Amino acid sequence: MTKIVVWSAFSTSPEAVVARFPDDRVIAIADEKGLTAAAEAEVAFSGNNPRRVRQLLDATPSLRWYHTVSAGVENMPLPELAKRGILLTNNSGSYDIQIAEHLMAFVFAASRQLHRYRDSQRVREWKDQAHQELRDATIVVYGMGSIGGEVARIASALGMRVIGVRRRSSPPTPGISRVVAADDLGDVVAEADYLAITAPLTPATQGAVSAEVIARMKPTAWIVNIARGAIVDEPAMIQALREKRIAGAALDVFTTEPLPPESPLWGFDNVIITPHHSGSSPRVGERTLALFAENLRRYKAGEPLINRVDFEAGY
Image (cartoon, rainbow, N blue to C red):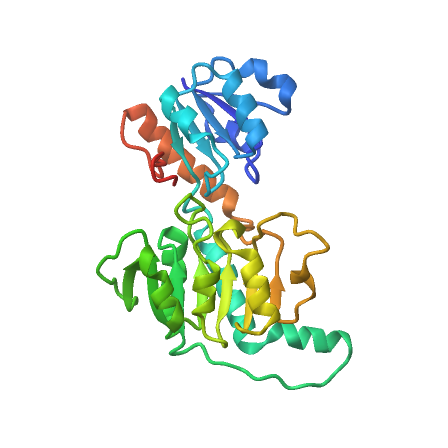
């Protein structure tokens, strides 16, 4: 019997975890007052809120494995987890479909100018907009993990030319024109009609879409970000949008969240905004539980875990 503490697991309720693992002891924590019951837990199934992570780690001296229901781990205390010998796994794979669909919805909206039609609808204005086609357009996917791979698959199926960017260059896979190293982002971004940002936030990716990178983009190109706001130099992007040096931006993430009301991004007619909700799906809970169940089986069997975070790489 494995003792599993569950606290603040986003769309996965503690009750669902209890029902899924009847042969294990699931310790469901409703709030901080219940943390004393978690002292013997060896597995944590929780989120990445820094305050709650801190409280949970302090309350679980016997913890051996932490599964975060987030894909990104930039809020996790990686050095401490490594020092304590705690395995960390993330929820990568549970969000691929819905986030990739959200990103491609951004791309479709940008190409057909749906946001401008919505603006015209509000004021009852019958007005044409200039459209673009996606077939043969180039999408640069910065971050070729599971989400980026799904974006590349969909974009390729639409007839788009896909250039992948990852830590190291690699041979292209079917449907991808080429895969270059992260250091070459500034070169390939000049070819992009759409720069899709799907990378995790790490010291290596923070600010990677810099003023210099943005300056190399075509005036008809769009920035599409569903990853983390801090990957982009937000002031540089705002300036480029204001001066129409890029065509637009479709953004689900921002440097400061919620996006402050005074941010100029709210007022630009060439920006599409959603509130960091691209991972929302009625099926994310079942995918999360399926991933955790397989990893729990592996944990008990002493097998390597899926999505084990590389503490040095930061994802």
